Image (cartoon, rainbow, N blue to C red; front, top):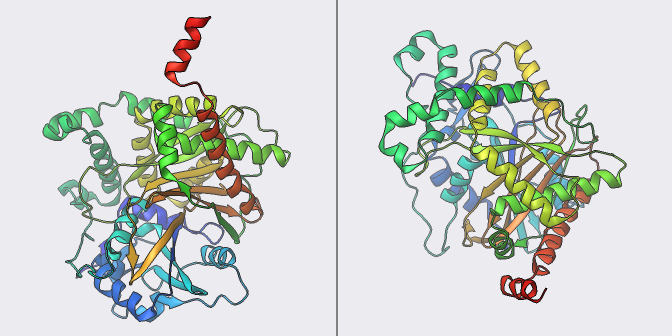
Length: 468
């Protein structure tokens, strides 16, 4: 089989890789019991490798990167045990996040860490293989609802790139870049039932031009974000941390009462935690702090291919608002405006351009992204019921998102089996105390819950007004 070129967007994530900012998505599953290495390797062999992209490595990364099947794929190397010694799980995960994958092999690895009678499995995957939304489908494929009835191996799943038009095949990379951006636009524009039923209207909506041009202007004219310790010259070492699991039902109840989304609630808590952290460390950030927030651009339906299919929006976090209720209302308003905009499509086009742009232009784009935001925030909804990996129940799931440019902090949100957890990934030089941010996130959720409970019930509020 001929080597297949990476899509423009996937190539962009490959080209953003550097020793001080590895483009890896790292996740961790904490298991109730010890996992057998041979059992995990068998699960990977029969169920993960059916996504045949994971049998492939990248060749000619510095030129025209292409996918090539690795004839010497060795599961003993890809699925291995990591000796903990005296190191904590947090230290082990931090070292793994800071260590590059071997580019001569398919760029993914499982690391099994024994923790007494329990164990943890850390999965590292290069971002060029897929985004967090795609990799969650992979995790779903390798886990079971019932360990007594594991799934079968299944058939191969979509490693093929999107079908290219004749123009793209003739002209090559520049036309493919535009094609990737347009396909992303169509995915988002076609998410409504009416547009799905009328493809012509989807094209008209996606390419109407006015909002796309406006949002491109907004990004181009964006002033640099406020200076703080969250941005600066990055180092090689990273630090990870995470919160204790929070009850998803509580967060949903708050969202229902405040008439907003679960994401609005959790992002507002991130804003509160970062504001408190920066003020405590003497960073007098007035007003807002800007975050890059990924937006899934896949059409509804089952996953048919891996890869990266998301745009990004710049969200101004109201870190200067102390009242939890006021803050979540402001986040809801700002996120509502961004959801209706074409900014995610513009960002997808920017990423696609980075996949084929000359190095000078690519570096300029990266620098601009780093100047315009201080933190990356991503939220992925996992499964609602407990799962099993290689026969062991998964007690918790976490993941950490890589940053881009000179952004030194990423915060990930993942829901799983009635829990929601925050994962914190920080540059050790800029934010050496990442573990100090994690408890603040949980504290903000609790503060918002208490503030919501203290509000008068609708009936009581009406009776109170009548008495006045």
